[in-house]
Amino acid sequence: TAGTLLKLVMASRFADYHKRQDILIDAMSLLGARSKVSLTFIGEGKKLDESKEKVARLGLEERVEFCPFLPQDVLWSRLADHDLLCHCADYEGLGKTIVESMSIGLPVLVSDVSPMNAYVTHGKTGFLSANTPQDWARTIADIEANPQKLPEVSEAALAYARKNFDHMRKTEIYIEEFGKLISER
Image (cartoon, rainbow, N blue to C red; front, side, top):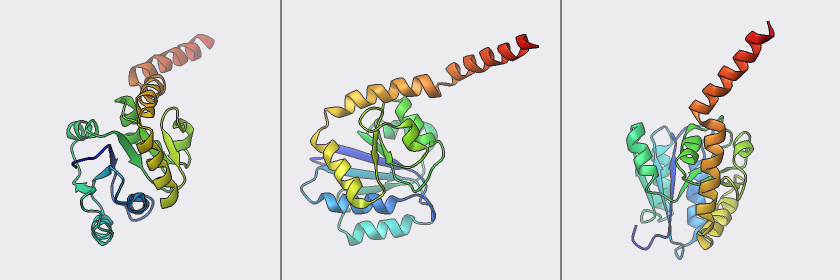
């Protein structure tokens, strides 16, 4: 979008139980017309039409767009076009999209819920927000006002992901641990 300073993306299904795109839409509305933040939703699901209707009702069509589910390689390419991955949910396991974003150096803003708050440290490896539209809007506005934080968070997230989620490193650890078990026999 022309004039956009901060490009957000949320890649997740529009589930009818724990994904909270509605909070993110309300937060975009609270940011106001002066905000230079855009948001792209990528995904499909039961609540997609409801979310599109809410965006239209709030007059956010110029700042919020919807894209369908994308194959993995296309998704990664699209994520790289954004400044911040958002993941708003009432609960989540180890979020694959979150970890993938961290591993490509895309900063993340996630709900301050377990276990996401165990691997995202606010202001260090990403950003956390309580699950209210007001808190999300406040956190987004702070990031928009201080975009210089993003490269530092990106570097820390990338280092954290490489240390904790890299499959080659995990393989080495498994081999070491199995070696210890065998040698104890």
